[in-house]
Length: 101
Image (cartoon, rainbow, N blue to C red; front, side):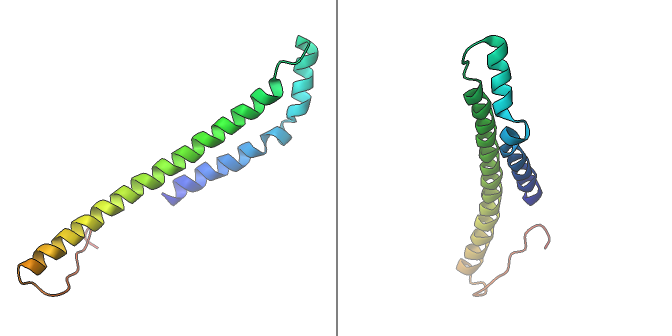
């Protein structure tokens, strides 16, 4: 999970630098000169970068939510096991190992 989130975050950081790196202002001026007039190029370029950023944030959130769901499943299963053993007169504390750990 950490590797996935880190990779997405690295792409986000690289994308945030695109307006400067690619010199969006010069691109805008060149397109305006060739096409004549304001076409909203600057806003389109920035909107594309912003949309990509939002998509990556959404993906990070989905990864975190997925892992949280898996952890909750394991926690719930462990607690159920603990409660069943206690009701059956088992020891006050038990340890449930998950995935052979």
